[in-house]
Image (cartoon, rainbow, N blue to C red; front, side, top):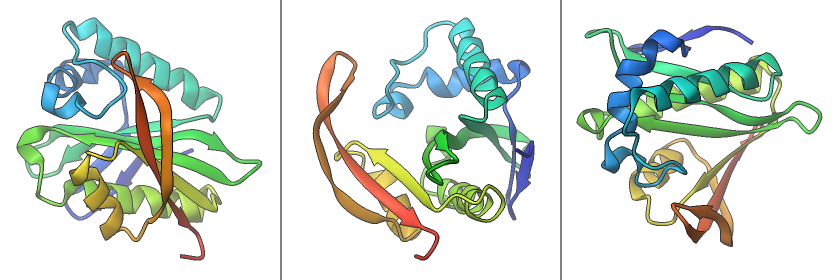
Length: 176
């Protein structure tokens, strides 16, 4: 798996432990973590632990996570990646989040578009899934722009912040 991807406005590169201060700022914002399966971070060490977890998953080719860096400012504005990579069944799940000050500027769409192309063309993934809370309208809009298909709602699918929640599942196939 590669270490970086480029878009017109963004540089995507694998997360490093040294990114923890920037990622802590993003992951400590309750508006950003509202629809994530984590609570807002309160200590920078939590960001370091997540980065280390993704490094371990990357070593076993089960996941890859990139920092999203705005080229103009060189600032880390979020992360995106592929989770639950299953090469045998040619599928993976995407995940992403953007710092609140960068919402509504097309950065998530731009980053995910590039990530999808990498998954489909280089990793030979056939199916990309996204699991989104039904109330996460911003994320659903990103998926719609990228031509994902809504497949249905998984009722009380997982626990988030102590409560069983519904999850909408979306997919994009190589043939789409």
